[in-house]
Image (cartoon, rainbow, N blue to C red; front, side, top):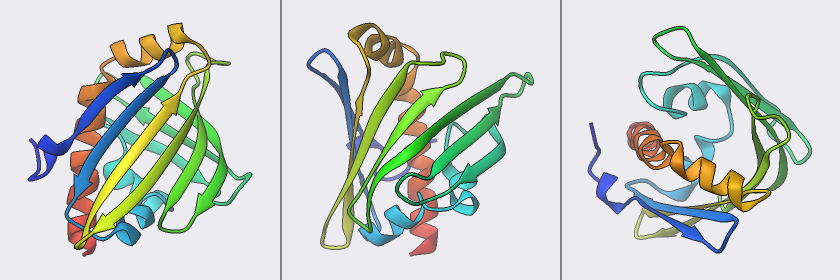
Length: 161
């Protein structure tokens, strides 16, 4: 199920290490930012619909740690973790991202928000530690998963608006 702006989603590979994704949202950027700041909100949009978040912890401050654990309908568990490196309210969040099933392969992700006429463009750049990791992320179904995740994010921010 797509949302009104689902067709604005774009994913492209940049150089050997980066994946860049962009999408528009029908909400001001402070609400898109807010949706990233608490487990209360993250549980409502992070990941595909078929996944249930069974554990969430966010220490939303520079140097703070985050961890999200999901379970699929078959009972398989997937855990992700990282650390916040930069937070500029309503503008930018940079964090590390590690899938616990592949320890040591740590990406650095930067999310930037821009607003025009009450609509927000979210740009996320994931920088993998090496080309093999980047290509593996891209081949893992990342595009479909991110599209569905951001559709869910839009549903939340439209509701908050």
